Image (cartoon, rainbow, N blue to C red):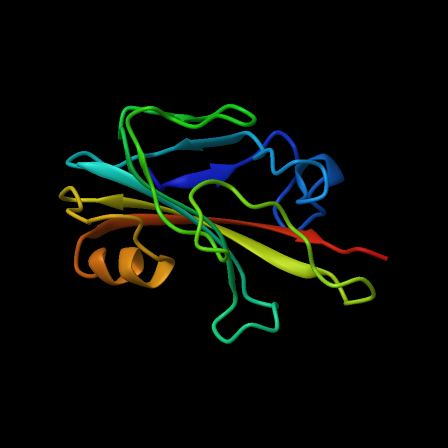
Length: 151
């Protein structure tokens, strides 16, 4: 079975509702997944806006240590077993979309990684640190892309 990632709040390639944006309080959308491979030690969830003017994109969410028995996250849920990494402002937690007014729609990429062993990271790791730590450990990866535009 293939690892898949979806949301009841928006379809892949479609707009993310404004209630999940930065101006509305940074409440994360619900996410569902299935097809976690046997032997998965932990799941990692990453969210980035590759269209941002920041080199390498702007990080909106870093979450690692998710229980592989999970099948998703509820709207606004912060799972107790997981550890946060630093979003683009250097803080833990979900940071909702907030592209500049007038920009074309930005694409927000959610990545779910199934790892064969648990990560050992310190403090509040960055997206790049978590991504680098997953190298050679990824059993499967799923992606979900939502768009967002402020007019």
